[in-house]
Amino acid sequence: MTTTDPLRVEEQHVLAIRTLNDVVNERRYDDMDALFAPGFVDNNPAWSVRDVAELKVLLAEAHEAMAFTSHHDLIYPAGDDKVVIHITFTGRFVKDFLGQRATGEPITWTSIEVFRFEHGRIAERWVQADTAGLLRQLGVPLP
Image (tube, rainbow, N blue to C red; front, side, top):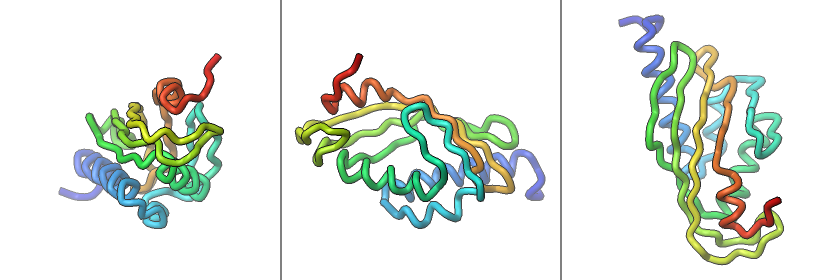
């Protein structure tokens, strides 16, 4: 099988997303650079991240405050350039965050994410997360 075989490419993309999950859970943020394409675009309505450097900072701050890990509940290729995941995050609110005092309480939230690849690297991501549920658990007032 050659690397241009669509099945092989899909397998490589799924492996990259699994690797990303491991890297994030192990807080090896600098290892993310090799997984993302130059010009990466993050489409997440919950925050504005312009590039991988900002994404790494956001993840580090969130890890510090919520001591979370992520688990892929579902992961599957969607064509030759996309991977879709359903992911569950679990943690504990251990440090003040978003103007709220840490409670030490457990937290959990889910997300559906679509990753688009270019030349084997993540070029774009779309996120639809249960941000309102997470904010409610952190005690952030909602409208």
